[in-house]
Image (tube, rainbow, N blue to C red; front, side, top):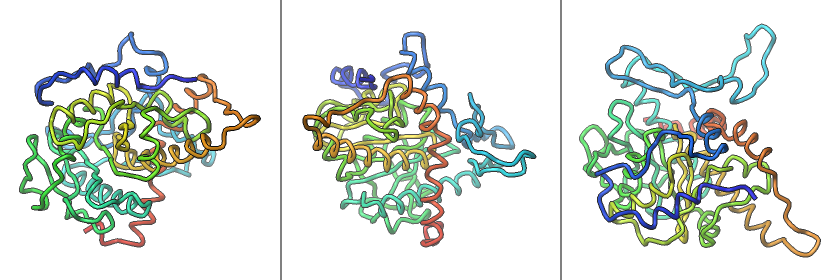
Length: 338
């Protein structure tokens, strides 16, 4: 059976009792001690997403190891006139911020349609393009289906609601989790957490999903497990332990007896991975329940899994996979853009 990123989680149990602001608990750079599959995964998840330097006049896309066409493997005409949409670039921070906030608001509407809302127990964060130490998040006690771009709250490094966003209260545990992830993983700009039914159900096993079917391969060597229940996340220390368990390369994590978190270079990627992971948890539970003599599980081998993860789980492909959901909700609920 293929390995997952759960090796990181065992270290999280020994995370020192300190605030998450003092020091990063692990190196971010890929190094020679990583397994080949982890190096491969890290090298492909570099999308052509917005990268704005306030000191420059134009935004430039982040570098990619493989081209957009290779990552999403689409076919066009021989003259190259048929194209496929890709993440845009912007000439100024304000335009980039508007686009990103609108996609964050759309993500909440999409998650609501998927049934991932439950009281106030859900939050999605997005790093600000002008100041990466700040992030946008949903206001506390506003239903996902009602969130507009103007409702989003800008949060400071210490949890303060800042004047440039909506003047609304935010969820304390949300700040503890998301601030830790954003600080520990500068390669990730968005994080998504909600109490989905199948994610909750599968989390009680404290283990990763198995590579049993094609869609699960999006998470091959890319899904960590936090193998303990630390209670409601109210402290910086517990948020730091979750960030440590996520590790330096994984985008998603299962929190034992709690649920799951998915992350991405874009909120589109993080939101789609959340939908995909919840469905994988559902499929895993069904497969587990169906096992009986003559109906044993058959696993996908590591070589095929690694190849499929690189081709079908890369960040560009995940951004693209979210766009149909985005288009549908914007068409039917255009007020989210306000």
